[in-house]
Image 1 (cartoon, rainbow, N blue to C red):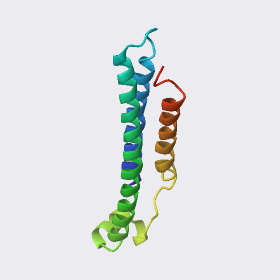
Image 2 (spheres, helix red, strand yellow):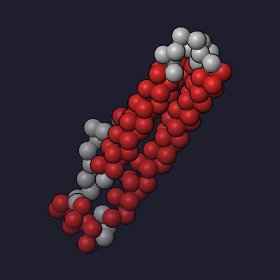
Image 3 (cartoon, rainbow, N blue to C red):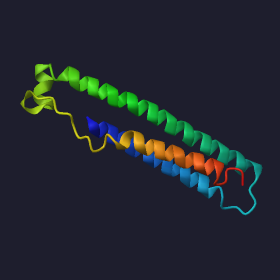
Amino acid sequence: MEILLQHRLNTFIVAQAFLAGAFFTSHVPAEPSSFLLSARIALVVLATAYSLAFIFLSARMVAGLDRLKELLVHDPVFALYYFPGGKFVAGDRRIRWLIPLIPAAVLVFWLVVAVVGGVFR
């Protein structure tokens, strides 16, 4: 079940990479126009909103998957498939600590970019 979380995290990272690429590409022209300024602001707002939404939704998804595991452990058909030996397996916790950390780090990155790095240059 943690594979779903890992795929969502990979998708988030790819989307943020495209947003960062678009933002830094807008700095290529020597004299920025009002359109580029508007595009930079829109990219920062979009990336920040996406980071906040991902933090909120991934927390709900982790809680929902944990609840689903607790419900499935008592079902005889799913227990044999998902839980070898009928034991509740906590799952692979290696990815769990990354779920809130990576979006929070990306959010800090976009806030630093907005304040320091040149939305208004």
